[in-house]
Image (cartoon, rainbow, N blue to C red; front, side, top):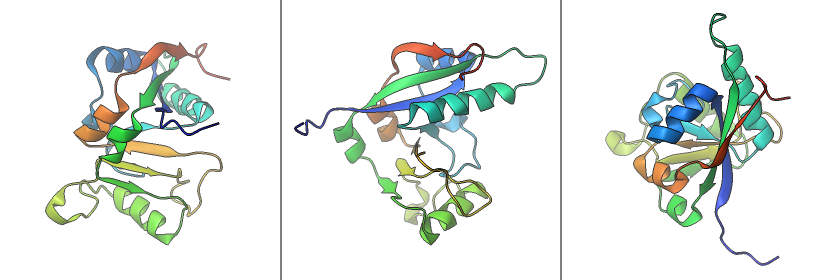
Length: 167
């Protein structure tokens, strides 16, 4: 098959309540948890099963008195717009990757860049923090800056839901 530079499919696992808010109001990277692998941002993955498992975990972490439903949003990432982002990509989980994850998990807001502005987008494996290993067949894309949010775009299709969890 010939290369077409078509959009790349990405998924975000969350609760149904949050999925509806994102679909209605858009993406706000500042809502994301701060001490994450690549810092505070909006995380997606190219692996549907991984997004479903993230959604299940979010529902399991809800207080016991809150009934939650796991949900996955689908996005079509515009490759040309993503290429214009200030980005950092880790292909393998080497010592630089693990140092970067530790730095962010300790609360970095700047990725230690000159000028104090973090990357717009960071891509790489998923860390099994605090161990220096990664999960097989998993990836994560962290959208931090407005350019990355534009490249991600709005969710496409309907919200996929578990019953209340995905298998």
